[in-house]
Image (cartoon, rainbow, N blue to C red):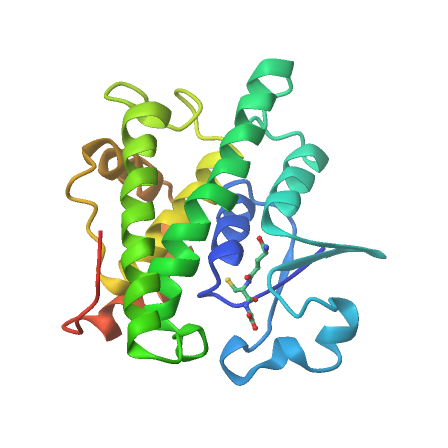
Length: 224
Ligand SMILES: N[C@@H](CCC(=O)N[C@@H](CS)C(=O)NCC(=O)O)C(=O)O
């Protein structure tokens, strides 16, 4: 198997963590996001969406982080994707929630427009508006994550053991660290992130994110 990835990519961090924690046999192929290699041949002919990550398993190619996590968990029969009907449905629900509700406001409205030049809005007024809306939305979803998904007692989003919902969710939430989000108002979120960061492969997999956060240190950002 091959994983086409860039170490700073949010989805790639989720997939690489699952691979590393379970010692899955997978070669990593770096696609240089920064120079736009994902939009050029030969990568673009393999993945016409021009996005990372992508998994290649023989002739089978799979994009979309959530689908890749589920495929790997099924292929290797990982406990991180429970088989019991309602438990699996809950994991799927949490993954959809992170990937759509949470990511839309937190990633695409709050973090990316401030961090990525191509995501910045063309006028100051539009930029301010999108970031303000993103911050309000992110606060709403963080409250739901803190009080509903986690609450004071749960170690992970779907119970006492990490599932692929935690792999996906923690990669998305820690994206905020790139702009200095500390999540101080969300103690259960902080506790949960601490649990995920205790996984043995977390520091290696997230080295590039930590580097990005360090390079942005001291810059002004709207945060949560
Ligand atoms: N829905 C996709 C999103 C993938 C995505 O947006 N990847 C980013 C990196 S985190 C990317 O490849 N961006 C390249 C670009 O926009 O040119 C998934 O969940 O895998």
